[in-house]
Image (cartoon, rainbow, N blue to C red; front, side, top):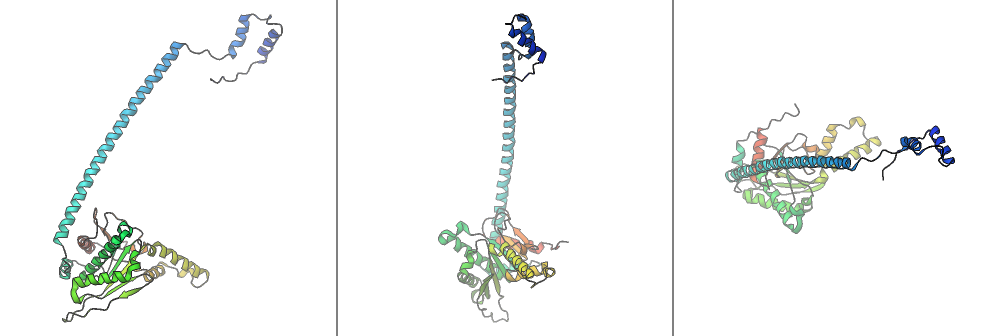
Length: 339
């Protein structure tokens, strides 16, 4: 129903109409009554021909707008298809290139579980990290034990590569911390792997985790030529050693400051760094990611301020070629330390 706007009737017209009505409409002729009421009546509707013309115009406008929308939609779909096709081809070529490169490296630099070959690979490098850190992932959340077994084997392989290359300290980060519950078993697996590489003269091994006592193996006897195998220290980390440790340290320092056991001026970056280094670990020189993307996955953030991070795009799984390429990249990196 159309809404008729309210019209204010003048008092003069109202009095005239009421006087005519009082005398039985004898004072005014029909024409005069029409002239009196005409200013207050709504506008007459347009003729049917005009309504049809307006409807036809609106229909044609909608049709034109519909054609424009259809053309615009087709254009958007075409541009999306072109972009999608371009990036799909690019990703396929990139994955193929990295797969071929990794295959060449894995064939040419295969270690054959021989420390002498690994030592030959790293001999030409200008420097090696004293503390190497890696990030591993538990496959299938450890269901059925296959994921845990694979994780332990990967940790043992990396430990053997570090011992062969002469890297004294290795930290292994795994988000869930499942390895911390199997420290004796992990120590035994790493010891067996070192024995497979070095024979009877395998290095001494120390396996530990923050706030957990270390499991240490005795140093193997020397080779009889005056040289002794180097020792290897392996540290197991998890997500609780990252931000949670910083939060706990912050709460502890705040409580000590409130109890006047330490002054606020004594809480410095050097103090926080010393406490975190003692309770968790020091800063690693090199962090190697074996995944296809740079994902720290909750890795302790304080300890990577000056760490060189390396990964191989589109790589899947732990491999010696990634380990060796990470060492090469570290040897060529320039440590400007913020300068």
